[in-house]
Length: 309
Image 1: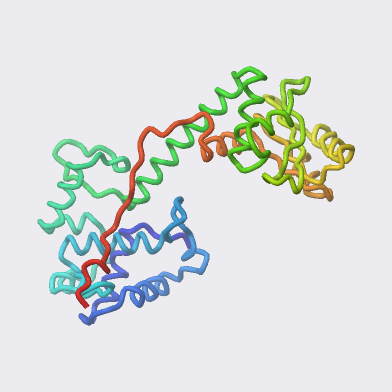
Image 2: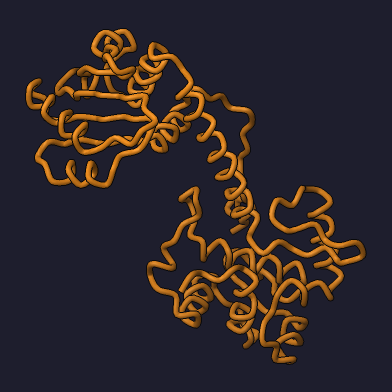
C-alpha cells in the first residue's frame, strides 16, 4: 500500500505511545509501519531529493504537529512520550486524527496561523472567508520539493523549445559543451575539433571517453522534431562498425520510437539513446543554458550540539 499522508499517521503514532511510557523513535517507527502493513518497498520510497524516506519524513511531521498540539512530547533526543492531553484524545476513541481535531487546541491553532502568516502556502487552497486556516496535507519538505519539480519541469520545457529554435551551429556548440561538462571529450577545443556538423542540422564525430583518451565514443546528435525510428538508429550502429567504435551516443531533440529502443537493447554495441526530455534534463543538471536564480538550504537542529552528556 502507498505510504499514508502525515495526518493518517497521527492516530497510529499516538496509539503506539498509549501506555504512557517513554519510547525510542526507531521502535515507534517500526511499530507504526507494522500496524499499517507497509512493505519494504513502501518503506524504501524516497523524497525526490533522495535524502530521506517518505515514511520517515511524514511520521516525523505527524509527531511534530501533535507535539505542537500538546499530545506528545520529546523527552530527550530520539525518545517520545504521550501527554495527559494525548491520553484524553485517545480516551474518546477517535476513528481518525487529523489537523481539524488538533485545531481545537490553542497552541496548535497559533502555530498554524503563525506559520501561514510567515510563509506562502503552495499546497493548501485559499480558505473561504471566515473559515479557519487549515494545515496542508503534505509535509513542508514535500511541498518544497513538489514546487521545485514543477519549476524544473517548466524550465526544461523552455530549454527544449529554445534549443529547437537555435541555429545548427549553436546546437553543435551546445552538444560539445554538454559532453565536456559531463566529463567527455577532454577540453572544449578537443571536443570541438572531434565533433562537426552533419548535413542534416546535426552533429557527428568521435570524442574521448575520458581525459586520457583510453576509449572513444561515437556521437550523433540530431536537432529534429520528428520521431527517430529504427532505420536511423540502425544506420548509426553501422557507422560505429565502420569506425571501429564500440560505444555510441545518439542524441535527439525529439523522441525515439519503441522499435528503435528495442533494437539497441538487442545488439552487442553499447548505444545510449538520449531524447529531447533527457537532453533538457541533462542541460538543467549540468548548467547548460540556465543560470541559478536563487538557492535555499534546508537545515535541521543539530541535537549533538546541544547534548550535555
